[in-house]
Image (cartoon, rainbow, N blue to C red; front, side):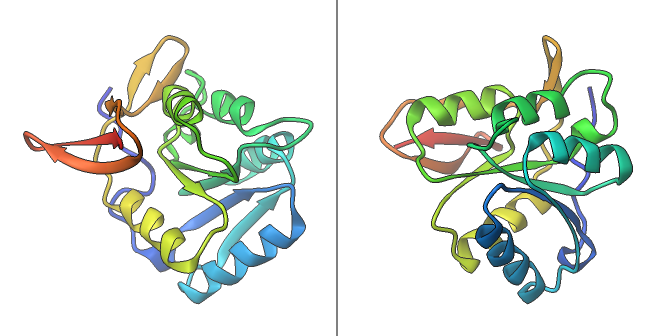
Length: 174
């Protein structure tokens, strides 16, 4: 494909972020953290349906979305964003927020096109780390059926961590 994420190589303070989160307290917490990082261009949506509307109206560099929302959850939202024919928005990196990360959720999230995952409770350090990781992520998107996603080889172990193998970034469940 040859496309990298819309956030690749950008400065932290120049990012335009869409946060899709049904909990108003979590939206306030995230917005406060973003402001602490110097990020002020922030769009908000209460669920995946509202998020898709925001993406029709605005170009964004990064999407941070909750996994469990109603009426449209994170899985359906990500699948719609990553759909072939939804260029260039389908190349925006997507960080998933979840209160419960399991091996199955991790595999499913990366399979449908998630860029990264962040487990609640969110700390400023963990959020900043994920955003900085996305800014440096040079993996190209590939077509997988009807969606675009970045390659995310996962090694079956106990937890998730990033590792470099033969010059390529992979994820390991440890």
